[in-house]
Structure formats: structure tokens, C-alpha cells
Image 1: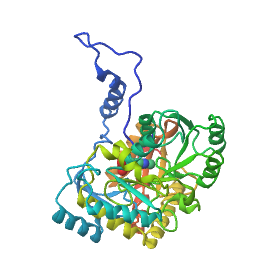
Image 2: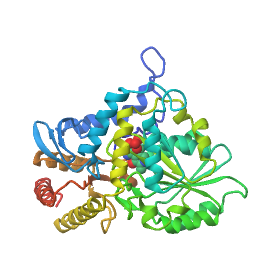
Image 3: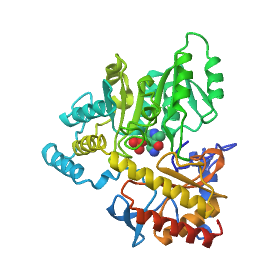
Image 4: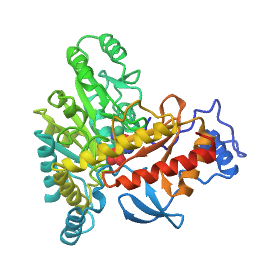
Length: 419
Ligand code: PMP
């Protein structure tokens, strides 16, 4: 469900083209119309913004003006870290621009093994497998471990890559109400005895920025003998004493069978991974199609990932500053009268709930004119048909910038009548 890109509703019937054949694009007509209506009423395209120059993890030039970035996944601000950049440059010079091959053929370089070693150390786990994206990590691991005849019990607000992994594997998919322990247990209770079971959860849910009660959920999953996969995409590096995520923070990391993560957020580059203590985990490298049948990450990317992951092991000060930013912004927005996705700040994501898409787009544009970029998120990416302005903080936002952000929200909110 996550991520701000929309999918069309299914059409009731397919209209015919002039030649009498079906136009396969007609299913997109409702979305095309909604987009045209929005742009026709004078709004800038909220999904077409271009970063003309990126000045730092928290500032860029957009539409010719300096803009504060409050809508990236750059939680720990690693993209401009001098050590990260230097390691990428060295790998580019030493190993070339790409591997031109799969991890199981010519695409495993020493750099990929070093990233996997860094991940094992970061999580204190036995095995790590690096994928080309986090999307592929979910797609690959979920579809490979849960197939026909198995059951996947998952939170209904799960990320699109989790849903797609479920669909690819042909398992029975049983969603339950978001973060609802009773609903989750009810689904598990109904699964036929002897069937394979996988429970899929996220540490932080990226639309509202709320966290899962993993401790209680994992206890329930264990009671029904299910394996557990937790996607910690939005918590890695930030949440937990060592930045291992929500499972670490709640003291249940040892009970998780598979942690999925990404390099596209706190790590500051691109790529995905799964870490596990399962003794047979290494067989995944031969049977997981989204790992086998795609090219591996470029050497420069894995080099930056390794350096970043190692630096994140020792980033207590940054974690502290990011928590302070999150608390300050949450309180400031609440005091201004905005409706937020969570009562208290639970992560680096703070969702500001908009009354509808039109007013949400108006507020998004007003903020951009003030010099602030946030994400406009809408259904089906968002739960319960909500339109949100999603703010994601970075450890590199200064206290002064958080103050500026609040001033911009106040001005845009008053201008658009949201507050
Ligand atoms: N899981 C979750 C929860 C995510 O939010 C995302 C990306 N937004 C992914 C997985 C996929 O990560 P990537 O960008 O590396 O494909």
C-alpha cells in the first residue's frame, strides 16, 4: 500500500478502440482524469518535481530556489558523508562502473561480500544477502519462502513490495487490520494444522510513521509456530540502541527469522537486503529468482553502502539529534493546530493529515513556494483513503531549520485555510 504512486481502480468493462480491439490503457482512464482535473485547476504536478541541484542531505534547488528537504528517506544524512563518497569514488576507479552480471555468475565482487559482512556485524546475525533494491528483497524472500499451500499473515497496511512478494509466491494471503493483535491471532488460529506459516510485519509504517507492537505480535506468531519476517526499512540506523530497528528496541530481534531492509533510506544509496540466523539461509542464493535473474549492484554502490553501514553502527549522537528533531516538529505542528498521524512522535516520519486531495495539493504547493518540500501521499498508497503531507526528518536538519519548517507550515496552513 505504501508509496505515493497510484494504481488505477479496475474498470467495470474494457471499451473497444476504433479497430474493435481492446485498449489495454483504458483501465488507467479514471486516474488520467483525476490527474488532469487536478492539474487543470492550476496545481503544480506534485509527482513531477525535479531536484535541479542537491546541495546537502537537507537542501536542494527546486524551481530555481533553495528548498529545505523534508520529504526524503535520508534519515541519517549519509548521502554527503565524506567517507561514504570517498569509498564510492575509489570503487568506481578500481572496479569500474558496473558488474554486468548476476550475483550467482560474474556479479559478486569483493565489495558485495564486504557489504554482507558489514550487515552481519550490524545486526549480529549469521547470514546476509544483498539485493539490487529493497523492493526486490521483499519480492524475492517472501515469494521464495512462502509458496503454494503456505499461508502469509500480514498487516493490511504493508508496503507494495510485500504484497507483490505474496502475489508472486502463490501462497494464501491473509491480511489483518493494521496493528491489531486480536485480528492477527484470529487469522493465525484459522490456518489449517500443518500448513507453513509466515507472519510479515513492518517496524515503522511509512505512511503514518507509527510503529508496530512487535513484541506482542511476535509472541502471538510464535504461539502458532509461524516464521516471522520484519521489514525494518524505515527504522534501520535510527531506532533501537544500535540502530537495528524496532525489533531491537522492543528486545525481540532474536525472535525474528528474517529482517528485510534497504540501502535507499538511512544508508543513503540504493540496494536491499535480508539478514537471518536460519541455518539453511544460504540456499536462498540459488532459489530466489529476484536475486538470481537480475544484475548485481555496481561496485561503487556497495562500497558506499559498506562505509555507511559501518558508520551507522556508531551513530548514537545522530540518533539522539534525529529524535530531538522529530519531537520538536511533532509538538510544533500539533501546537499549530494540524492533525497528525500519531499522538506522539514514534519515528522520523510525521504525517500531517489533509482534509482531501485538492486541499492537500494546495497545501503541498504553498509549502513548496515557501521553500519546503514534503511528500504528498494519497490513496491507494495511504490507509483509509487519507491524503497526507508526509514529513520525514533527517539527522542533518538543524534546530534552526526545524524552526523555519514550522514557520513555513504556519504560513502555508493559514494561506490555504487548513489551520
Ligand atoms: N519496504 C518498505 C517498508 C519501504 O517503504 C520501501 C521503499 N519505500 C521498500 C521496502 C523498498 O525499498 P527500496 O527503495 O530499496 O526498493
